[in-house]
Length: 303
Image (tube, rainbow, N blue to C red; front, side, top):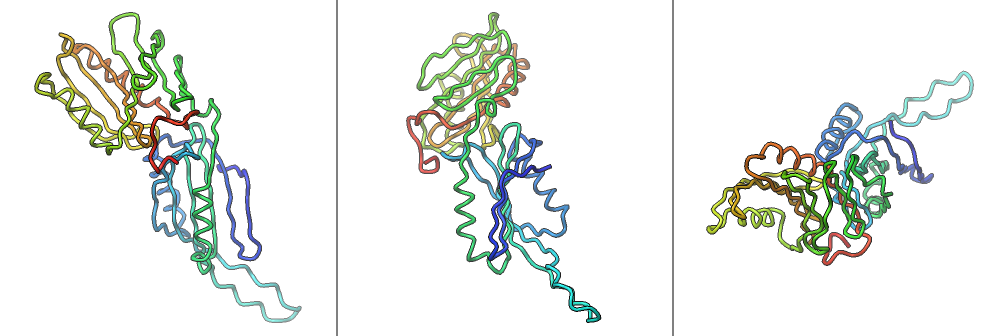
């Protein structure tokens, strides 16, 4: 159930904008889209014309979706006439233009819901779009922290993740090899790298795949698509002989501007099942937030 945070009304046009929150049920944009599609589809007063992505930006660390729809509601009944007069004619229905921005926020979801009369929408739409784009959020550390025994948070770069209990933490390189997690016994090793890249996500994934399938390595790799931290992600699963050992590699690539984050899991080839399980949990826990300091490079979409 949505809880109201603030409501703004315009008496002249009867327009309304309301900011609300509720406990989250969706944890990915894909699940959020499915829930929104069902919710608006179940209410027959709505006709949805589009649901578009709202990627996170410099002011807003939360990804989300924007619903564009019309809603037909009964008109406001006219005042009753004097005693003995004929009852007033029922008012005609009113068509409203609705734009609802839904944002994922860890344990919570946020919604900015605007409703204006359809006859006034073209005049008021620029202001509505500016309001949606102007949403600015500052999340507490708790809001962007994974839940679990081992939690690593880098507020300077702007990410957090969960690692297995009993694993140690090592930070090899503040620019590229940001952090590595390993246990006291041989087992899967997890890591987060950050590469400066202006290429598209698919090109970054292909570059990772090429490392394992290069002629001098002779390994094999497969590519797939996924979603991590509410953003499109690419997955690379590879097998190759490196360091005189047969190993398996699982890599997830997710981008924030020119920052190409690579979540890695490396293990002995005999530990493939354990490595895949550790990698899936690791990738699911990964969260991106606004960096405390500007990253080494950004694109226009993150300004």
